Image 1: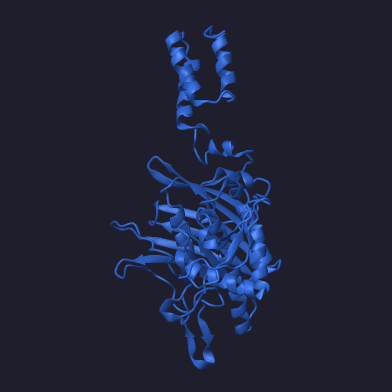
Image 2: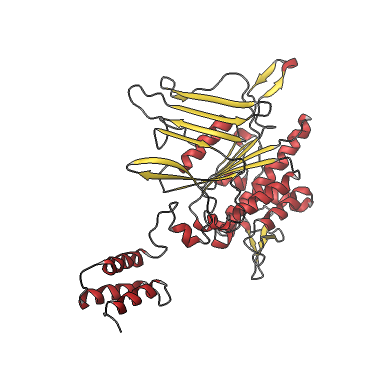
Length: 423
């Protein structure tokens, strides 16, 4: 499990430190304060490879940019500090065989996906043959189109892709297909909108592939390439989870070793493209899918997830356990980015989360309604008498932006009657 990450003179602030909990680590904050950057660095710390551009250090006289991290290795705890070498323009790494953090997955918001598998990406170890070197891929880095069409660098078939594997699995009807079906059902938005595979089909004369389909609630079977952005993200997650675990089991058998007992899952904007019904279930569903795939109670799963969704946070209130879950907030204060571990409290609904310190909205309403309410509250707090024109102007602004059933009307009408401005 990932335990700690410290950034010194790299990223959005001079100093940032995370002490991660063992199950859920939710990261919130405004756009542009470094949430995705932190996931990128976390991926690098665990895998020694960058999913995107390497982290750029702060520059200045006397600065020593540093990334320090700590995680549970396969055999012993790993505690390491990497400094930026300005001469080589790279982050230093300890020589020799790297530590093994278990399986690491990274789902990025643009649809790309990265996998580090301790059976397929760890250094080959064969002392009798004089081999102890990084002769395997550093990681599997999927561009969005690779997820669907396959990962084939330099003519090597590392992954067939969602379309080909789904069709092959469905044709054989074996374990992988059953796991995919279970994952799709678990990740469905509701019982009324189940993700169920339909029959394989062809979509054009120019494309000879057997194309997977999804059954819809309106009676049609839609090829997966025509599914909505939200559905495509969900089925991509389902496929890659099944593919990653199945390939890990196959590689572990070939190596005659036990499968990993640790999975770390990094997810950027987990709610991206998802309808509120999906936002309300996505994280618990992912945990259920990963537990079902591993089929063992001794496989630990740790999630680091970036979210902008108040509904997602509200949905976790019955599940959140402060002994193994945490909520982090990156905020801009006085021109500086500050990280805070937020004390967890149940707020009841998405509106209450919107007006919390996490999202900093004054009102869970439109901007016009917020401005009208602010003007109304200023008027209501005034000691001097309020003229009829002032009252009418603010009342009309409220009428233009608030529905008749808005609870603010009770306060407004009570005050207006008390002030003698309305009968």
